[in-house]
Image 1 (cartoon, one colour):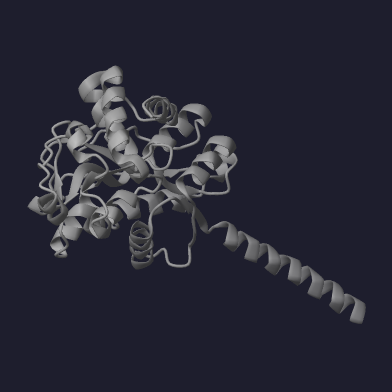
Image 2 (cartoon, rainbow, N blue to C red; image 1 turned 180 degrees about the horizontal axis):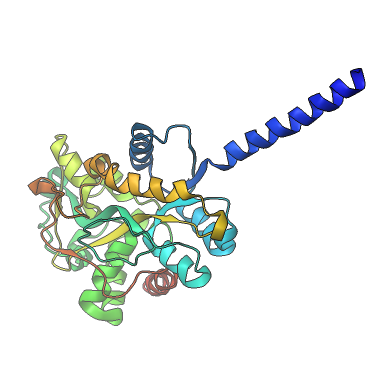
Length: 323
């Protein structure tokens, strides 16, 4: 009897263990490169719309997650990713690893069907108004202007090898002046920046806030936020344009093992989460959205060819040749 009871207990343990694994397997695994604000907004949307406890959210750096999706393809553990769109484009080209997302939307920026934009970042010339006045420096009208020798040692920009914030600047210069012209402008900007060539995307605005430099290039919404907070930080929409990088949601194609909840969660992040996300990243991506006048870039542009990791590497090489 004891032996029979032990066998029955073991059998039940296997059954319940299987149920537990089955339940765990239904959880959607989300990999994300999103900053804290965007991650909080995405999780809030999911939790408020019936998905609490049904997902595992893991954060990665952009390069780390980019390397994983390029190397692992559809065998990646994740069911859903939020990621820089150019990495998604490259991964799809190499691995054909994402399903089409056919839920209804009205995007203002056209994208392939295998991802939906979650947020957008725009670049601008940023400056410290107090330092500019104190040093009697003219207000630049373009990115090219900050290469003027008058700004020597008072400029901070990002190195494209360190952060894709710099890519917004490089895109604008290439589209406006061609590769050769952009190289010349970058050389003059880097000469002005000297030790203030940063690897972190937030490096220039931190130095501008502190008054260590007068002018530079950074993310537009950060300068808008600082100005509203009463800091002596302001911005210029440059003549070359406010170029845009997006981060998007995409669902991994695992054939008959594709988690059906992943697509529902992607839809939830876009349709419910955007209301939260746009408060921190105030760029309109879908019809019906609006931002206040300060956050409405006057010269918004999108690069003329698809953004991919290969194109980024090409532009990084151009930047290196300008140093």
